[in-house]
Length: 94
Image (cartoon, rainbow, N blue to C red; front, side, top):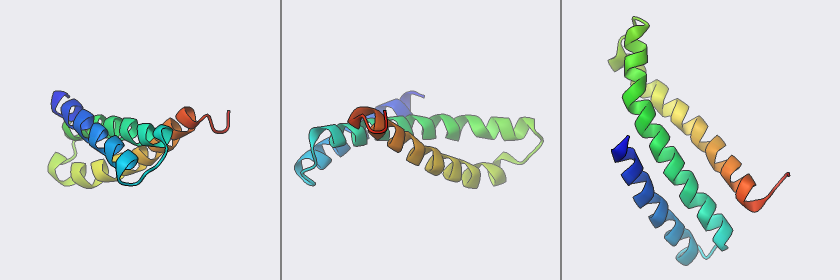
């Protein structure tokens, strides 16, 4: 939700600036990193708040099932988000 969006924007800006000025990568790569971090933060927030309800509706204990599942899902989807955003911004494989 809102907290994930605020966190994502903040982390995205910091990651973009860090990539530009500390790592000295080109602008397109820095933007890809920042946008990816924004998307991953929002995804993590939504998954963290929504998946426990889904597990409960399936009759599973949300406290036991959600943390490992959310971490794994967000990690895998985060890599996919990053590579797809980088591919689109850098126009790779199109």
